[in-house]
Length: 212
Length: 402
Image 1 (cartoon, each protein chain N blue to C red):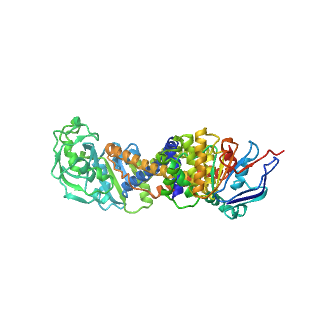
Image 2 (image 1 turned 120 degrees about the vertical axis):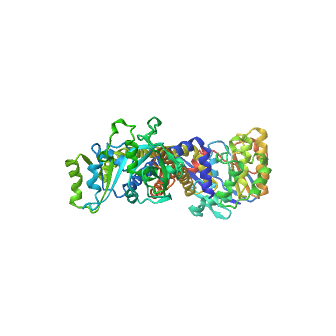
Image 3 (image 1 turned 90 degrees about the vertical axis):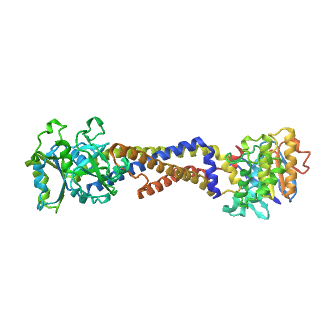
């Protein structure tokens, strides 16, 4: 579960951006909508601890993100937060399986090849297990990044515009997978997007407004 | 271990870059090590052949040539001296001279030099017999271990010698009495391994025989030798002045091996210094190459590094990843370089053994090589230091939105 209250952020020389409170229990699905420039990505980075808020607090897995010692922040993020980006990126030197294994290792989790194979089956990539990500199609890459984000059964899955680079068919496919897979590990799913195609599927939405 | 594996994966992911860096590192390490080993081997080999010889006496000419021909059997002799003029030094009970070994050079068999001498030669180099007998009559041959192995010589075998030191069959002493192998020496690691020893009389007999018209009518008094190898009893002001006395007052020339070899080392040293400098320049270039390739790939890998941070890696983890890449490169380049150096010495040794009958053991490792190897490892880590430090500073949030 995640609770973010009173969050605000100010870029150096920029104006102060305030964000609505966000609450998500396990299994919740939440859509954060907003035009570009409304701070969607910034919010996501605050929620994942990649940026420090000017005010406010983020609670994940019962821990105040800002209270987690600096040395443990990276491990904490790797363990409890999964992230999916608009354009999926991978370590080019590693193949599909090794990229997912990397997520387990970096989060300090035990290596579980069976879990990797199961997860790749569930996202329909078991035939690509030894392929290199750059040889996979756009849709495959996004499904792979999904599998990587979910392998550690995170409390929160944060998806930043996961569908805007995909066509309609792949868009529905990825959203379906996001929902099904987060439900399977009882994660809170938060999707930040301006993609109107998703709106109908996830009822719980928060809309960010331009700051005047 | 996993982190090391990751570094390895990143290196092999760019095979062209990896190859370039490895080749540069291996070349520089190999050159430095090669010069080091070669120097060490030549010095050691030449030193071993000094055999406590204090003075070499022969015909007037170049002192260095005299030493090279008389002690190392590398160059052609400066000429011959009459046995008569050498007699004073050969006299037992000489106040200054402990041992004087007469050598008569000039003939060879299949490129190996035949040395007319006496039993004092065996004592000088501390030689022992492995087969056959040590006591020799004229035309008997005591073969060095290396020659025996190379030419597959057996006791009782006979051959005609060739005039001169090259393997030129046209100059064979066809009408002279044949030499006969009567003994084979145990390996000593000295120049004696590559020689065929025979009593002085054999050489005279071959040349008295008459196939050299100018030698005809030689009498006992006309007998010649080529050089005398002298060991002093003690070193004092008398022995100090002995070479100058000989050079000033006789037709002979005396040369001090220690002095001449020092001059040779100085000459050789200039060449090896140049090679050394070249090797260090290549090492610096390879360091730059590692640095540049890491630094530029760091720019391309920023997103990957940010991603690793998102997945739980610490800044220290990324730092280590890149340092390890430098380390692995240096490890590979260093091992390759040392192998290259020894393979080079091995090849050169084969050539030297064939051309000059000088054997090298190419697979002996020097302690200095260990230090060189450690230095190269440190060097790889140093080259990766700045890129690694930069990796700590990647702004993940900023990079991920780019």
